[in-house]
Length: 78
Length: 403
Image 1 (cartoon, rainbow over the protein chains, first blue to last red):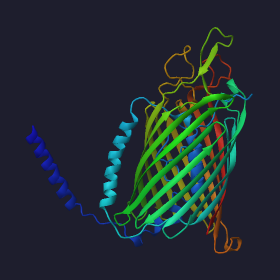
Image 2: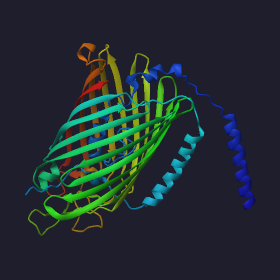
Image 3: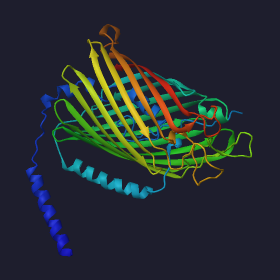
Image 4: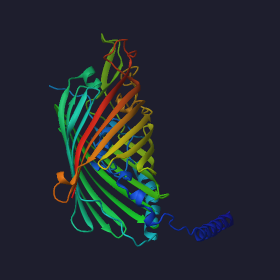
């Protein structure tokens, strides 16, 4: 039994190590290719004060909570 | 004396039974440790940036279901140095309530809620650490909390990893009852991964676990039960919630830049908790510039949830089970939001000095449909009234100055 575990761990180690080595992924979108993403119209936090209000309105009327995003998280609003 | 039955308190929305807090925090700690390991092991050389200096002044209004809530809000963000930024936030809710709960068992009421937040952000190379404290004050509910977040850019700034935790402490009172005094605590732990996928597409995955402990029900709300000994055939007793609630939310978001300079946004969130509430919400947003000065925003959102396992619109008899709830926010319901917004960038001639200003107006229309919450004021007899539903108009008018 213990031999099987040792073999499994060894095999997993080899796979993960070689996997990492073969996963030499380079960042595929260069900084100079990000002008569209940097456009303010793409910003999820374009209107932070409005986002806070939206999160507060929903927080008081729905049971769901959490993972709202940068503005909503951790509010714990009444 | 004004008797209050319902309020928009977060305590309306808490409880649990199955996951213990240490177990929940333990399993999340493991996830965060892995994420932290990733952050520390992947290094890079380009710096992240703090947000721009700005001040936003907002008037908000919510009207629907017999409730009218409005007030001002202000958000200030200013760099103290190149690597430190300060934020301050103030928010006021002025509430006038004559909701269906209030009208069926009590009298309308008015009240105010004041909220303040202070935050500090520290930038070090590609890492931003932030600390935030918050306080909210009402006649019968006093809440304090703090939160800590770390965010790190990596992989040629294609990837951003962030994580954080919050702790909140709440003191609950009941107006007209000097003896009543309860408290609750809330713990939050979260992580997210934001990834640039193409030159036009980004996606993010966020998770957050929340654990509540303490007095989680609304001290004013009652449940109703069949009672043949009364002329109306219905009796009322106080709600009883469990002392704990654990929840977990996962959100997937994507933003896409359209070829003609417009943006599409997508969000999907799945939520579940130890009260057996499950919910899904999906949102589509669209932002479109009109000329150089205007920007149009459209939003469509659908939300659906199942009810808590101790919820009932009408219990068969008094003390029918250990835990009792008739809060419609814990019932089976769905809602649909349609939103529209417009932002106007003011010309330089109308801005002060070198600052830049914008004026925005947003309107959301929300339609709520309850599938197991009946309107006790309707005809039809106890338990046969029509199902409740209402619509709300939400307005935000705000002015933003970048300086």
